[in-house]
Image (cartoon, rainbow, N blue to C red):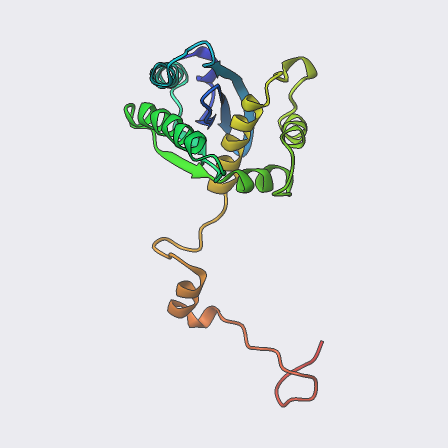
Length: 204
């Protein structure tokens, strides 16, 4: 284990899949406070073969998992594009990264790119630069620690999104939806407000 993560109660790893560059980011969490442990990229363009790139992804992700011992992995889901071959390769890269984490029994959660942008910036249409700037503000990242490649901040954004999502209070154990919760707990439903003047109702 890397000494940098020993002080944290929880460690979340984020990955931004790619076939030329794959980003990664590690968040350490104590209580409700997330901190950046490390972020970086895995450069794959020096490998001519797509299969060698996949092997490199597996080796590096496995190495990062062994080094930082994350409790969970958050990974950006592939987006739908017009180039089918590019989508296929990206899906393979994501799958290999997931397999590397699963080989160490790390639970995985996928997040759509729009969901990550919405979670971090409040806007699903935010640019990569805007995501990076918001991460810098939220996590108090010094200027000289900001990476030149935005794949790294995209990966960190996935980890932060997972931190936010898993921190939301659940309705109740075993409940799968708000509608089901209300159906099973009718006493929790407030009386419906009617129009002003209706018997038993008060207008606002």
